[in-house]
Length: 192
Ligand code: GTP
Ligand code: MG
Image 1 (cartoon, helix red, strand yellow):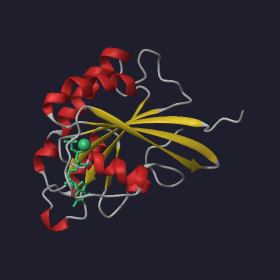
Image 2: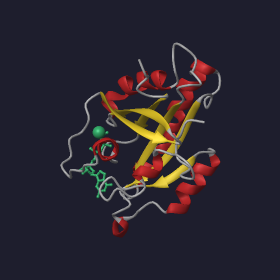
Image 3: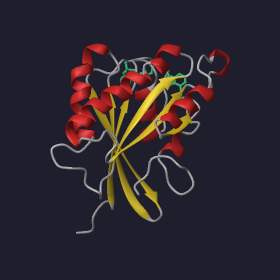
């Protein structure tokens, strides 16, 4: 039987509550948006298959809860994202997407803490935080330019310091949501 896909790519979205992680996943997987806020409880995932360079890439996008009280569950899933217990399979690269809200300064400051918690889990398991795990920084809600609190250059600087890629996105207007999935020239997350 023919395989339904050539690569499986698992993504995990993390970031403060309300930054728009669930909306980004819904825009990406179903091309939909709602302004009603339903805070995620625990964890959920959606699947989308995309064609990149004639290859079928199955993207399994894990959406986590930003609320502090779910921290233990979310952290447990980093382990999944870094391929535990088996080492990351080169045929199924893994990625972590860090999301903040450009209208919420605190959510940007907290990116440092989210980075730290990935490092702790990654370091504990792999001895090297970035081994096998692709990271990406997203500044969401860029449709709300008038309420911007986080300047683009501050985020660019942070991304550069950590050697990761950065996009400003909007789940509402779709801006840059497709670009994030990667592919030729897009520079987002994509299987090597
Ligand atoms: P938790 O599940 O609590 O961690 O939050 P979350 O990060 O999943 O946030 P969610 O996607 O539920 O979005 C929170 C609120 O922000 C909702 O009211 C969304 O409609 C709104 N929102 C999300 N993305 C955007 C965006 O790109 N632009 C605008 N204007 N609003 C957005
Ligand atoms: Mg959510």
